[in-house]
Amino acid sequence: MDNAQARFEVVYRETYGQITAYAARRCASPQDAADVVAETFAITWRRIGELPDGEEATLWLYGVARKVLANHHRGEFRRQARSVQLDAEMADLYGASPDSGVELKAIAQIFQTLSDDDRELLSLVAWEGLDRQEVATVLGLSRNAVRIRLHRARRRFARALAEADVRFTSESRLVPAERQL
Image (tube, rainbow, N blue to C red; front, side):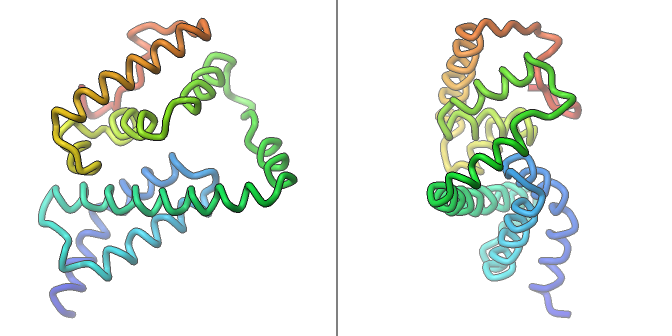
């Protein structure tokens, strides 16, 4: 086994769970998430020489997965634009889950009204548990730009929630269990 293959296998084992969770939270179906993960690691294999060392490798993979997801979403948008019937079926299938409360459904709907950039920033912090420096690395921005954009995104989200009369307490905030922000 050569060095590139060994390196890929180590990175794959260490990051597969994180990248899969990242994709699963952003895709409409497990099959789409599996496609995104497969494409992310295929790109990683082809570009193994560009893969940074250590913790930077995980952040690099998030960046690759983000671009793969963007391509996936563009393709999905084109497919949905061609088929109104498919849109109706998807709405029926994914419209409401039996265990979701009214407030959670309202929050999810409001979250979807945010811009793609705001949703991505908030998701990287809340779902992936990344800190500002890590988000900056993933998005290719400065830490200060992330701080400002994150503040504005949180403010817009809070304003949209208030306008929809959705109330929440500090205990109900979504914060990753293993990290404090």
